[in-house]
Image 1 (cartoon, helix red, strand yellow):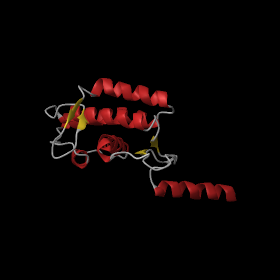
Image 2 (tube, helix red, strand yellow):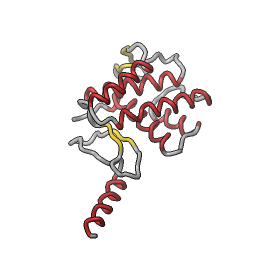
Image 3 (tube, one colour):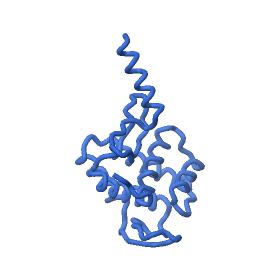
Image 4 (cartoon, helix red, strand yellow):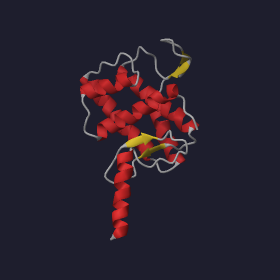
Amino acid sequence: MKFEHDNMVGVHLAVSLVNLDSSGSWGPGTLERALQEHAIRRSRVTASAGEEIRAWSRRLRPVFEAASQEQRCKKINALLADGAGSVYLTTHDDLRPHLHFAPDAQDVQSRVKAVTAGALAIFTMEAEGERLGICTLDSCRTVFVDTSRNGRRAYCCARCANTDAVRRHRMKRR
């Protein structure tokens, strides 16, 4: 399954926000960098907006932790209800037509909510309710989006996969 990069911006932003919060790296500078890296335009963040986005990121985590398609869909529907406004098709900045879930004039926290909720909904539909997850390594809480060819990713990175493989190997030798 091939995923379009344009449709993935909000999904990758959701991953970044969740992992930024759970890693203890949350701060005004790191948040603004994450928003800029994921094409959230005019992303100056006040302290209150930052706290609202942080609370939202904590609502995003259960989407990645969901044990079933049904649970994931319920979590995303709740996000859509609270975060997405009117959906409309747009073109700007020499981009091809794409969906927006909030007007550009809205505050940054409303746009973050809208783009993450909308993108997670579209991605989940395209991925048939799969391909969002949390690292299998017990000591890691990192969430990820699985864009691999076979859709069987279990770890956030090669380091965690190797750490777990070494642990399993050592347990077998005992």
